Length: 338
Image (cartoon, rainbow, N blue to C red):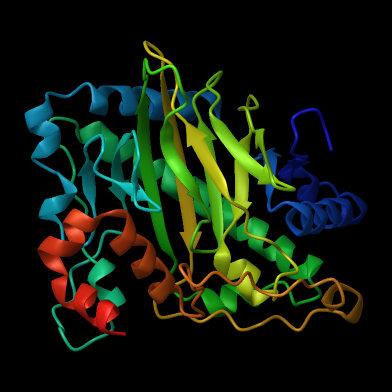
């Protein structure tokens, strides 16, 4: 482990011959068995694309409040669009951030008798005054989708499965991009930018504005800083990958501490997950790895479901109670009754 508290892996090693690729897979398996977090370089994302994304984020959050609220997520049954500061919760506590949520561009499914997670499918809400936001987000999405697929193929081989294992079980991926602004707080005590949580899916690629700290990862019961590394993403696995490996790989709690005023912080997590109706089967690990599987974390307040859509819906209903109450009161009632 480096002084950064998390290992640094270079994705380009996969293209540098069998020995380098094997070394990358070993390091990938070790990092996500140990802590579930690492830095990833060699992704091919250019500084120019990073700068365009950052500028688009600043431009969006600088829009007049009325233009942002015109696409507020309470108008979307699919949890898309803008969330004002204080509009999201983690473990019941208010997160001090604003954001826009962007998922796959789809038509809504009108079937009320289908599974509840179908309500996550639908169109995005884009700011009319900023058409370039959609352009750069689309480019970002397409590049990171390639990075995510490459990582998952490396994981499959590292876990003793065939290379296309995750491709076969993913279906049409359910992605989510959040563009997030953490405004500065002038309180003397640290504030919850986003509270401690585990991601509900498979894989997260997080880009953080250069020079801006605040991300912390839980290791051995202690919170350690994960500052940004130039040219690197912070990568972590979610609950479904822990489930699929029966705890050999581990999903890890993480949080963000708000910056001190007048500073602010932009971050852009990219969540790469299977189709909502996909079930990731338990991987038949080699005996030596299976012996080190710790079992799936058991938390009665946060059950891990095998079907991704159930995990995703659980997370969205909990994080955005205003959207849930406006559009999905029947789902909330059914969960209370159960």
